[in-house]
Image 1 (cartoon, rainbow, N blue to C red):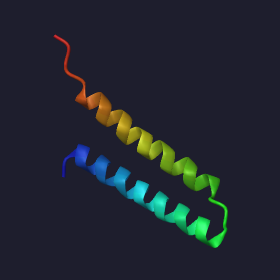
Image 2 (image 1 turned 45 degrees about the vertical axis):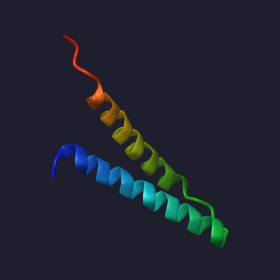
Image 3 (image 1 turned 180 degrees about the vertical axis):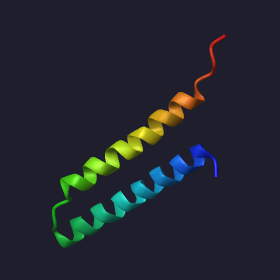
Image 4 (image 1 turned 90 degrees about the vertical axis):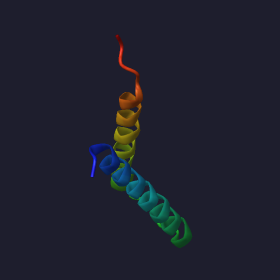
Length: 60
């Protein structure tokens, strides 16, 4: 598997987990742990930052 696809898979999995866990917390009335948000945010930011940087055309 290519490195780009690995990052994409991890970012999409973490996003789905965050959405499901947030929905669960809202339904049950529990608070969303700060640690969970602190982990998911940088992972998703890394993926989008890295993929945007890789899409930039090379300067001649």
